[in-house]
Image (cartoon, rainbow, N blue to C red; front, side):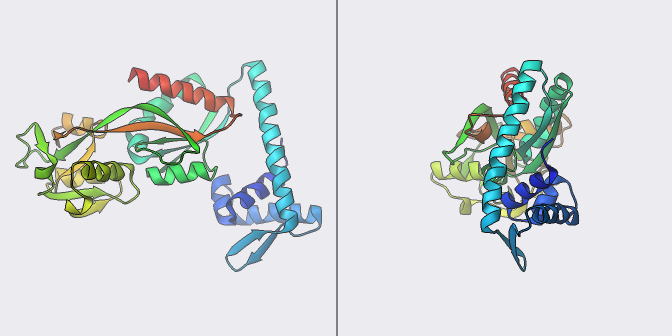
Length: 298
């Protein structure tokens, strides 16, 4: 219902990038450029200054962006009010999740949510915890699911549940016969790590510091970007690692990995993260409520 040209302009102005706006809007870059040109022709003035690969808003562009923010906020509130009166739950939700949550927890949660609210469209972005928090700060997503503590005090962080992390080894590894291992002993073995920015890596680093060790004490032989890649390398006996117990359930059942409890215990929060807002789409409120209920019952 809102002017498409203004929607496209607003996205480009917020991201200061035609390329990123095209990705977010699921449009081609020429189509985004055309919509902005149409709006500039309507106002008979430039809205962006373009220099090489960099764009900035002109003085007029700044004012148009301010009004666009107000217009879309009022439009969203109107739409939400009508849906509250009619009882309709619909719309497009932009959500993000860190890797472990996206791969092992969200499929069931989002599947159950879609059964109850079939008219809600969900677009999921997967990144590490650091990337998801950044997308929330930049308004790229409405709601984030992360697996590490969040330091930004301007964001609302709501606990889902605590998640236990354990050491994992191949069934043929010399540690496989133990039910528990000290971290001091674990760090003497070749270690397979998650990439920098990963929530799992951040939690492990802080855990090591608390017990008088550091990340440098790990004998890192490989850094991999997903739990699945790490599990494959550990199963091939290329090293040991630490992962969420949630992420290894099928591997344990199939006998591909052995889980060993850490001493001392290592846990981390799985949380929902969003901005502090007086107004939020009703579909987001429903997803938050549904997610809390899911966490309590699983």
